[in-house]
Length: 335
Ligand SMILES: Cc1ncc(COP(=O)(O)O)c(C=O)c1O
Image 1 (cartoon, rainbow, N blue to C red):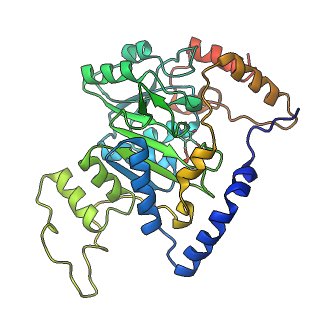
Image 2 (cartoon, protein in one colour; image 1 turned 30 degrees about the vertical axis):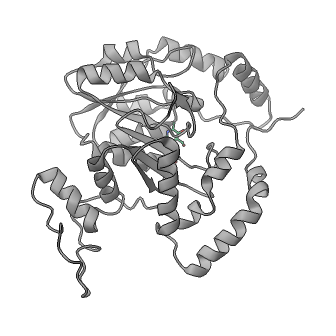
Image 3 (cartoon, rainbow, N blue to C red; image 1 turned 180 degrees about the horizontal axis):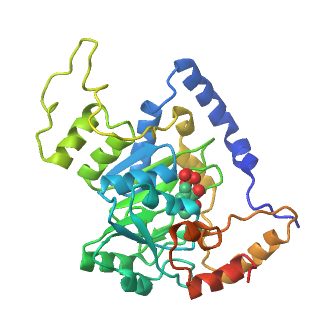
């Protein structure tokens, strides 16, 4: 029997009757970026993950980038992460000017190995960035213990793990921030790019909302006040009625355009998640069988993980990760 690794048309066919009128209504309403639909989705996503704030934005990559900025990570800092991941886990670390430091993985789960993390901690380490690879959560109890002991932030790359749980809590609710991707092939896929940041911290939420929208308006003013300790100059003032509106247009920080298109959030996206089972690699033997099946498919293309794709050449970083290389040879049939 031919098994397709994913079929993007299947879910669309199931949800078509719900989605098409919602898309038409949104287009007729003329609201295309952020807005009420996005806000409603943020609320239901926060409740689903079990966190105070969910901040929607354009991609998982920018979720990571903006989380790092909001946590104050930049030049001179080191972030410990896994070499067994997609390229986009590490790009944001480099793009904020910090240095990625790779720990090896646990060969049973393909996830970052807490013992290896501990060996990589230096005086410059500011954060640990575990990836819940293939939807299987990393060893979060140990990672959180290490983070607490050394005073480090934890940024969960939950881009592949919407709906996964560790110790009864959802991935993305355990660290300081969780980062999600709604890239169409993810387990909660949009009709294009999309992402989400989750956090319980009000300060982090304000900073993320400011950075994702050019550091402008009320969130920008509040974020600047958090960063500088100066009073929030818009606090308690009445919104102006004239053309110049510092509540909206004044830019308080240099940020990004990482807003989410409203069309990505129509209907109830979490319904889609309930229709799909989150695939966890609980049984590596089954996973191995599936991988071999897909690898035998003509034209099958599986994204190379980080250690195999040259980033380490650019960064001139360590490449000796015995467990990672063992996982690579199993999962990707490579020597
Ligand atoms: C582990 C991991 N991190 C980050 C990303 C980046 O997400 P996006 O494609 O939404 O930018 C992805 C997915 O592509 C991913 O699988």
